[in-house]
Length: 144
Image 1 (tube, rainbow, N blue to C red):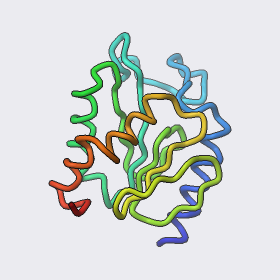
Image 2 (image 1 turned 45 degrees about the vertical axis):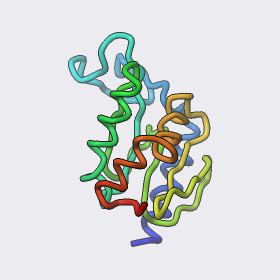
Image 3 (image 1 turned 180 degrees about the horizontal axis):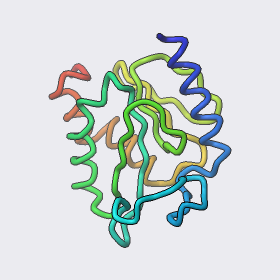
């Protein structure tokens, strides 16, 4: 399982870093692929795509809501498992990084993908030092 996760994350980072992460086209012609016009963010919102290991997906809605409450201009889109367009990858498995910066937060590995915007860096900081860390502690994902 670990080898599979390492390979998947490495592939995700390699393709995500090369694809201009975070700059997908809203008309379906860019790297983000087809988009349902009713499913995107409201006007003025910036999308932040976060790939979360399936083992952590249950605990991330509270993190997503907490971050969005503190950053009302950012809409977090959490994808359990693999997401080639992710700007941040959160896993509880060791990772091999092809194109990004890994930060260890407790037993989590948080990858800030190369080319990610300031909103992605703010999300990593939220997990490391902010309310996100408290949410993860309260849910039992992290220890105090």
